[in-house]
Length: 110
Image (cartoon, rainbow, N blue to C red; front, side):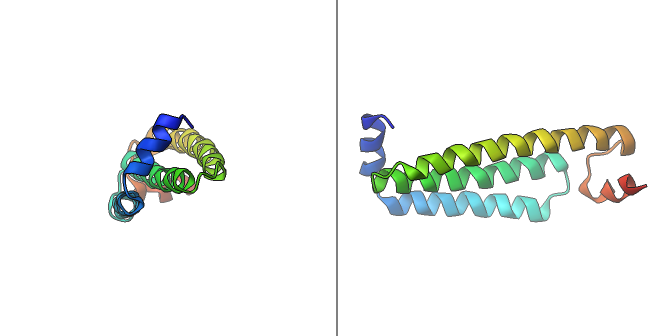
């Protein structure tokens, strides 16, 4: 990581990063639980991934340990795979059911 970025991260207390990360994760979890639109559910899952990335990067910079940044890289790979699979399922769902409502997924069993 660039030395200026590490210095900037260290000037903000770690508690603020933890609070922001928990807030973002909570918003994402609520969106997954409450919303039925598949696109919004995928966006909320991405929000949850990014909140974990923020927390890992903050702890990594705070402790001067690059292992957290390596985990961030792998989480970004998983998020990219999730988007690819999710959008392909979404396209097939729109073609077959003509809806992007999560409740309509039981029609795809046939």
